[in-house]
Figure (cartoon, rainbow, N blue to C red):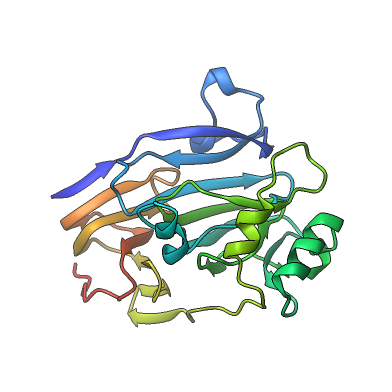
Length: 267
């Protein structure tokens, strides 16, 4: 019962940043390396995973399988994910969904000739925005962004296009699982009670933001994760059962299942 701070691991990526400081600074052996992700380690059986992402360049145009496609391949689950933007350079964008309906043959051809860059729906982003990307959504995170990513606990990415970088593509797998049309937000954020905003729901998990000037008490479902945005930013906590948080509180709370829990945050 209560809270457990998760260990973290810095991950080098070709598109990562070399200037991370403060709570995000890498260990000495990775100093000066392009750090793209910080993983907050949880057991393999955990439903959800949290990462911080820091981008200097665009990520590949990619897709993850949904539950049905992943289970057909022998995995426990697919990979729904959501991104909470914590910082964005001017002009930063996320590509999510396609600008028009394609056939699978057209998607493959666009990935091969590079026209998929123009067919991806690039949207300008700003700090505080939330993007929900269900499994099957073709997407790419642009450069100049710092994000918190909440996802189903599956490390499986199919790259469609990588701007000529010398990395493996997975055209057959990506084309087979990709949604072939435009994206629209699967959930509109709403306030459930004062200081509690539901950011994402209806898929594999619920994501909320909690903001209180004073202390907060909540009874959390098993598998919940808390991501502080104010004090203790840069940490992630596994939570289960009754938790008591000293104020002020500003954090993201994620828990498995698509149904909003009847938490009734107290003081």
